[in-house]
Amino acid sequence: MINFVASEYSSQTRPLLESLVQDFMLKNPDIVINLQVANWDILDIIYTTMISKNQPPDLLNTNVYTHFANNGLLNDMDEIISPELKAQFYPDLLKRSNWKGKQYGIPFVSSVRKLYYNKELFRDAGIASPPQTWSELKEDARKIKNTGKARGFGVDLTDNEIQAYLSYFFIGAGGGWIKDGKWTINSPENVEGLTFLKEMYMEGLTDSDPSVTTRDEKQRVLGDGKLGMMISGNYFAKVVPREFPGLEFDKGPIPVKDGVKPINFGVQDLLVSFKTDHTNKQALSKFLDYLYSSPVYEQIIQEEGFLPVTKLTGERLGSANEDMKADLAALRTASFYPIGQPEWQAVMDTARKLGEAVLHDRLSPKQALDDLQQFAETEQKRLLLLHKQ
Image 1 (cartoon, rainbow, N blue to C red):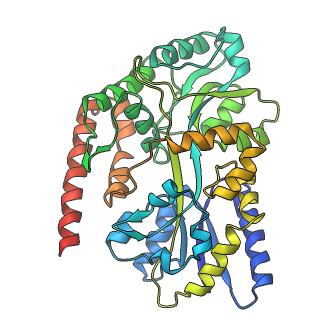
Image 2: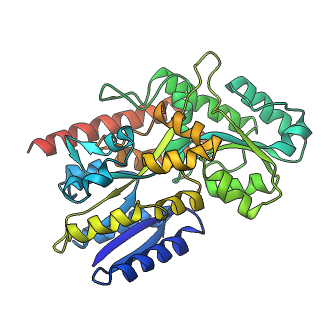
Image 3: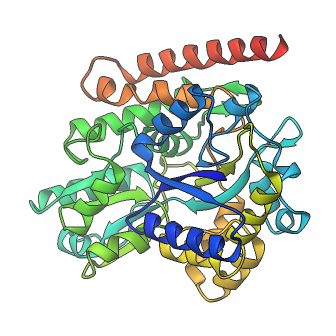
């Protein structure tokens, strides 16, 4: 029995994975896969409850891993995956799930973030090309707002994506989350980035509910012609046109502070395996070989609109799709979340409480980031001491 908890990326995820799992079990009748597909909103609750009951999943699709590894909960994937499968992964992505010399996770899917925009609204507002800088972003959002047809710029400061928008505007100001192993959350650049976001909101240039409506909801608002632009991942081009086939859209770079070099931002989700009293490494290895095989893995990538994490699939799909080829190249130079820090999950959880407080003047951007910085440093020290014991 393999208990597999997977993330729900779109309405296609559950039927797609159910079909793939059924196919695997037909070919391997001696292996049973118990599949559970959960929306990201409740995924954390599901697997933490399973862990608390000492019944962790054999395989989990997630975006964090080092706090599990720090607590000794994970299998070393080098003891599970075949050498042939390991050789397929892009080395830079594989390295991101290697902690203290052990391969605690393997990459599953990836994406690069871009500014997606409604071309019809841009034409109506007299905007010729997507904004490259913050000043252009503000000006274009105002032009869209002034048409009276739509809001300008979609911002997600909900539990789902606040860490993403903070990343875009931290890095877009020349800052970032961490440097040389030390948290830099309250750096002047990061404060400037969050302050700019708040200014956009206060001037009515964002959507009306940045701390309430999620990225997925905003994508539908954009598709419905009520929002001009927002930052999202490659999946936008696959998921949104399913619901809005008449949508004219295009993409541009993430806008940055005037004078700052253009940025690429990437996201990588992982598969990890928890230690259980019934772990069957041979069965897991066989299932993972199947999951990443052609055409199984290609189907996942194409259905969900992600970037592949394996070289063969990247070369095959990239050769037929210039956008994917360019995005895979951008991924090589992208900034990522600091998932190599065991305290990152706790930092994210704490950051999720900041959006509404900052937007509605309970905390200034500097106060909010000072508090988050103090939390990150305290948690980092706590986990270092715990690991030494």
